[in-house]
Image 1 (spheres, rainbow, N blue to C red):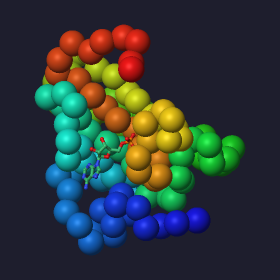
Image 2: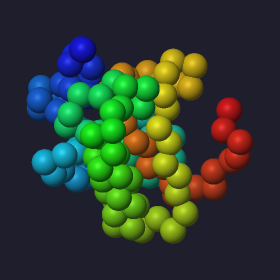
Image 3: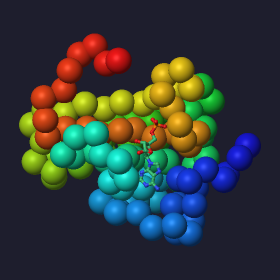
Image 4: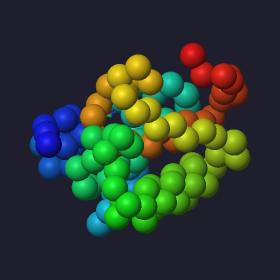
Length: 113
Ligand code: AMP
């Protein structure tokens, strides 16, 4: 299992990020190409390429990522926002370390493209 995605390099502090939250389970930082005024990524410290690879033991970790997403959205002052987890290339996933997008600060369209 590769540990060589750009997000692993961020976790290992080999490349910088604009960190907004960190704990023993996850790291959150601002997206380098924000799609809205607020665009934050939350990634687990455990290597998980995507939701296609999660196991039952990851359930609490997955819940934690969403809980931290809500905490960050609140701290960012967002009243309305979206979480996105792209899974697989056709969904738009480009980095194969699981990540939750937290996007807000503008009106978001539905359905997504
Ligand atoms: P996805 O397309 O769901 O895999 O999302 C990957 C996201 O990572 C994209 O929104 C990119 O803009 C973002 N991204 C890629 N490299 C970096 C980086 N070095 N720092 C912050 N965000 C990044």
